Image (cartoon, rainbow, N blue to C red):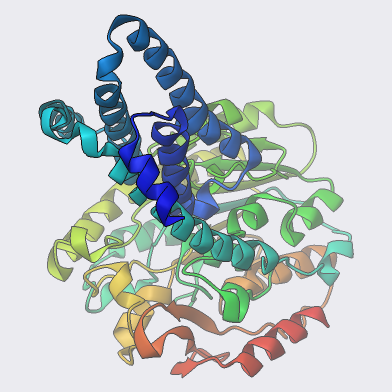
Length: 498
């Protein structure tokens, strides 16, 4: 092997695949290592193979053919420049998920200048890329095996067979990261939200002030909400997020199956493409973002008009009961990464400023629903808290905490219900997201709700000796900081299958 490598470095031959397929494969592996759950569809893989490998291979083939006709002595220069441009252009796109034009221009200038002295060394870079590819493939294979073979598949629920005696239209409006009223009024938020609470009261909403999410993120929380089951981040095999969450949330989950079994037409109205990036198989009848609007790279879009989406859904609705899931990406939470944090005080102010924006959207949505659909069941149901009090959400996942205010900042969430009184009385008793739809379906079906749901709240700590899955609130809502062991996780999984 050593002799072959030395022979490759010393000969004057140039191999097209070393500057097209090889760097393309390295970039592809890096892309999947860092974005697996966002890009794990077959059509995206084909697109990346075409863009990162096939097209560069055709380009270097054509350029090399032309250069050999014109000036074959410059082939090493061509290969050096092509290799580095390939890595620069697509590497920057993958890292930043967008173009940084000043950086690209500067990079191209440096490549052009350095080519005069470093051209003859490009094969050393090729060998380095080969080593990186071997290491990356091993790491990616382990990641894919963990995420795919251990993917969480929710169990069928008993309520899927229930027949509704009443079929009101149902609206679930989810403002992302809107913390519950008790936590919002106290430090570290210390925000007077009286005006919006008065608005909800005048609209005849009941508010559950101690409501919690079971999980700390949009994906993990909604996967629990739409299945009425715990996933524990896939137990001992878990990563930082639930890899199959988008497929569960937007696919044929127990909640959507139950609604469709009762002749509901289902609508997803999303302010962002976040839940659709990996092109999950959709079980909703209508979604306000089409496949043609989805990027292949995981580029996030924001600010899609959900009010317009709702009005369009009304216009396209068929006769019969309707279900609407409306996701609003505000007020969100403090920044995700420590490197981009402005510090906990500034992050708090930014969060509170976003409350003004989301209130405008909620006011408009709720007023229009009241006018269009006065007898509807409306749930304003946040997915988790805003993480105010932390510098970043990463900080909250770095080590276990005992501070109750910070735990509430993660898990307490806004939950308000407008419904006929008997239905409202049951729904407002929900302690956490896992209870919401079982309570709703029991009431609509005339069933007795058996409160057997496990209402714990769970978070995954990512680093150091403390890594693992922690229960931060127990079934009764009491604060704990208990690291789940393998037996706990297996017992939890078995209980779901009973």
